[in-house]
Length: 284
Image (cartoon, rainbow, N blue to C red; front, side, top):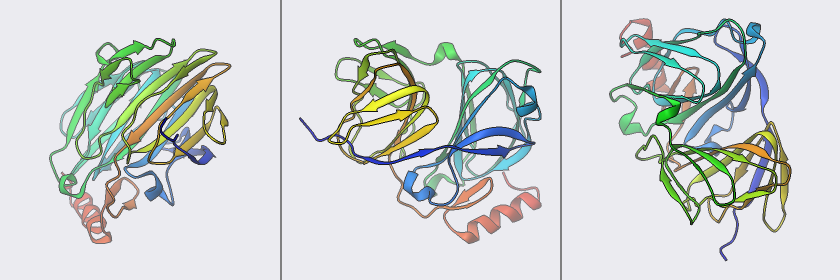
């Protein structure tokens, strides 16, 4: 048996506000983001109170990375300066490659009810940071789903799911960073052993229930906590009471990360150029 991935850190998300006052839980972001390379930010939003989300995210720019929005419940409308318009509904994903620049808005398409989901920022390699921007809406019906022999429901958003018994390609494949993004629902008593490549950065965000990680020092992780794992080894997960978990993995780029708000580049000079381009109306 190969060694298991070690738990490097367990950390709770932190309350935050973004856009025009949307309340959220910031799971990844801020100082030390190099530890999560190639991922830059992970936000969880979850509220049934429209005052927490109704103001949305009015027009704002991005450059140098990709945003992945996964909606569990609710409806959000996307519009951008390239003319893309999309409606992100329950179970759907919005995959936006900002590259050299996109100015977009994300506004609630509802005035009541639950708004719940995640937004993940994925870095681009330096060669692609000034490439062509792109936008893609993926409906819930177009995202592969499966149930393992152990009864775990898996939503395969990106990458390739493989537990040794079943393989399933996700809705999105990306070069260089090779992201793996799975939504796992473990019923009480279930286990799962997803196979991931050595060298990939692996994180687990427990957003419902509690999760058990096997190892020489077993860990139990409750909802609202992120687990950062070592880059090598197998992964054995279980839940005695049931859990929902976002599995996030990717290949580190190993490049300098310089961030200023919605711009993520490799140097301060490139950030200053992005600011000038936005000011002069030539971001994209």
